[in-house]
Image (cartoon, rainbow, N blue to C red):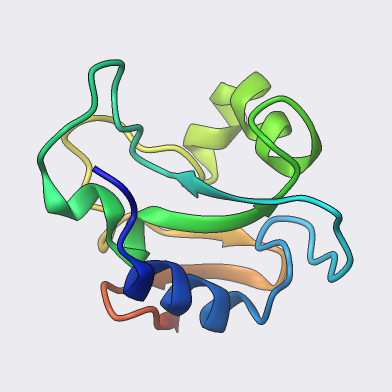
Length: 112
């Protein structure tokens, strides 16, 4: 199941086309990161592609901030960049380049 275009647009608008982890505004490669991973076989759970579960990061799963999150999983979980299976993305704060926030399913943020 592909990420719906509306979710991608909401994440791009929320981030201002800047990496939500480091704040860089110039990257040759952007990627959408799932805070709660899709799993090896994928999922039919529509929440998996909600803006609260998605971040715009520089790099890919092996480079840039996206790669950093994948390699530094302990810090990723502590900072809300990664979530456990039973976590609700709308209730777990995430540390972004400008502070700690809660993300909502409409692409908005609330400062913690």
